Length: 75
Image 1 (cartoon, rainbow, N blue to C red):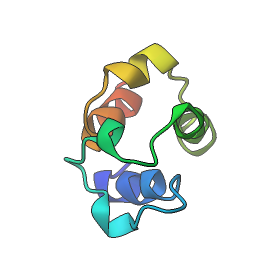
Image 2 (image 1 turned 90 degrees about the vertical axis):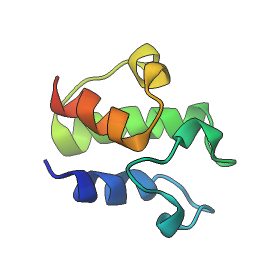
Image 3 (image 1 turned 30 degrees about the horizontal axis):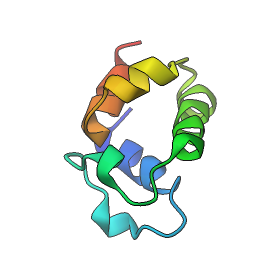
């Protein structure tokens, strides 16, 4: 699992946010398009792409995209 690949997959969760705006250090909760639905998409991404189960509480505790990457990687 590579960080750059994960960032690209994470950026795909957003329809209206340009992928170039999403980097490893992006505080994703601050993105206008971030919502509980996007969060559910991220949880599904972790399960389908990486075979890891994460919870909403774990996702909420993350600040940056890299935090989510590390959460999934260390599961």
